[in-house]
Image 1 (cartoon, rainbow, N blue to C red):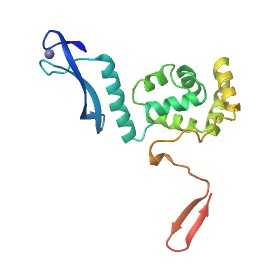
Image 2 (cartoon, rainbow, N blue to C red):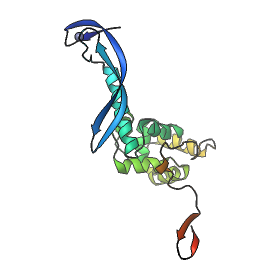
Image 3 (tube, rainbow, N blue to C red):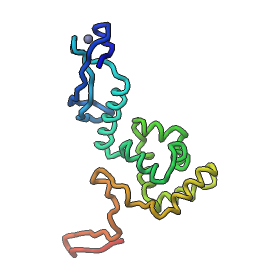
Length: 187
Ligand SMILES: [Zn+2]
């Protein structure tokens, strides 16, 4: 494969390889494997727009996992479960029109937005949010969402979270242990 090398000032044969690198994103450092392209003659890195975008996603998703935020794929999975476009998903949640698009393209989501999207993953919550928002959203969005909610195949257990701390509500019978009276059941 040939690409233009800025250092050599001409088109050169290039090599693509995976490297391990550390990046600082906001308050955290993340270790990731990214793909880079280098010039076979001078050895310098050659710019590859498509690859840069993929690398950015890898870095930002690593940050998300570390910060216990939904990854881009997880956001997409929740949205698609209800058959919603990015614009419709934004609309139901009350976000700006392009917000979900930005998140799925890599922008790191606001924590409050993350909480809301995560809650929306559960059909019960999605139905409640939809109920509150119903009169303020476009009829087409309303139809899509009503259909998804009436579809038995859409359920809250299909989507599995990728990190352990996301199992916040495993069941209704929480058990509290205390040293004096052993076990107590609370609801
Ligand atoms: Zn070169």
